[in-house]
Each structure stands twice: as structure tokens, then as C-alpha cells.
Image 1 (cartoon, one colour):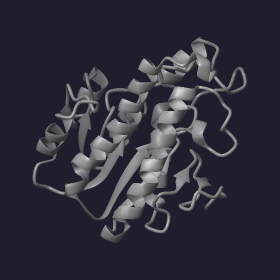
Image 2 (cartoon, rainbow, N blue to C red; image 1 turned 90 degrees about the vertical axis):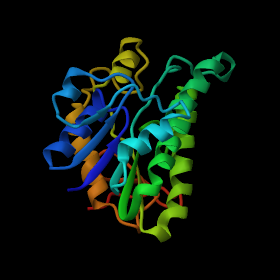
Image 3 (tube, helix red, strand yellow; image 1 turned 120 degrees about the horizontal axis):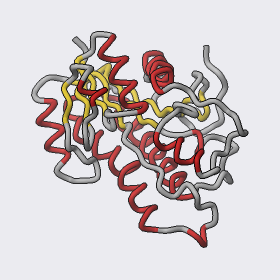
Image 4 (cartoon, rainbow, N blue to C red; image 1 turned 180 degrees about the horizontal axis):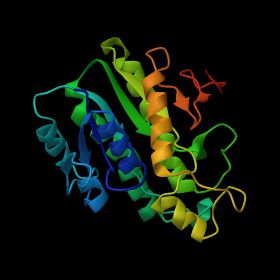
Length: 244
């Protein structure tokens, strides 16, 4: 049976990923700060009370993994606290620091905790955002964008260094998805999308992203994928094109 570790698993895309993986027969370790009824109902191994910003989460993750290998690590836990700030002059660096701690350092901590359990053929999924895609450099939301840009940079470096081990790194944007984050952004009138744009269901986004993970190869490792299977940025950082 294939095994996966998913962070931020109690709701939204993380919950959708756990649902899809469990339905596909995977053994899932689902981590979160506080579990939910929906996650508990999946019957997966829920690791409640895990905060990826805390150094001790490394040992907690490794204890949960145990001695068995992992086939997939999903760094999904994320926050968007400074979505209403576009101007550098207005940045609240306390909020930005927390975004970096969760979205970037937390993802790196998760990967490093799981890395000893990843062998040839294993994959790492870093859940990024379209805000750092080509042509979005002046989209505002400065703090969140900083954190996701740093996440993508980490993913490219990771891909380069684990390629010889046969580990594939997938950096993917799930697209505009109905989550707590997008609901808050939309409620504040801060969505960059046209009014009335319908958000994806988290489970649909999860299926799309997992489809990308399944298709990705070592040749693609470190590329940045869009929600519909298009390579937004190649391994070399060049704007890509749709891959069928």
C-alpha cells in the first residue's frame, strides 16, 4: 500500500487530498493543528496538534511515519494574513513573518522531516499559488506572494538536490479554490479575479493536483504547474506551455 503525509489536512484542499488519497487505497498520515469531523470521518491516521512552525514538529512527523517508507509528501499547510496590503509602505512585518514561517519554513520543515523516509520514485508536492505565476509580479498581496515565491525557490533547490536520489518534486498551484483563505479574501473585496468568478470545489482541486503529481517525472522535477496541467514555469524558470 502506498503511503502519504499531508499537512494542513483538516479542511479545504488538504482535506480533499486526504479524501482522494484514502479513496484510492493510500495509507494517509494527515497532520493539522486541530482535527475536524470531516477528517476524522475519513479513517486516516490523523496527527492532531501539529504546528509546522514549531521545531518539535520534525520529531512528531518522524514518529508518525515510523520505519516504513513514504511515497508522497504534501506540504499544504498555509496562511494568507496580509491579503489586504499591496503597498510596501503598509506592510505589517509581524504578519509577513508568520506567512513565511507557515508557508515557506513550515513546508521546508515538513519536507526535511520526511526526507529520510523517501526513496527512489517518491514524490514531494509543494502547494503553491498562482500569485507567483508569470505575469503576476505586480498583483499585490505582498507578504503572501513573498512566502510563495520563497516556497517555489525552495522547491527548485530541493528538486536539483534530490534528483539523483530519484525523488520528484512537484510545485503546483491548485487555482482559485473555495477555502477559508479565499473566502476571507473575497469577503474583503480583495480577490484579483473578476466579480462572480466561481471558485473550484476543494475536492475537485485535489483531484486535479494529484493528477499532476501522477504525471510528473524526474524530467519535470522542480517545474511549477498550473491547476489545469499547464507548466507555468519550467525547471529552468522559463515560462512553459501546456503539456498533454
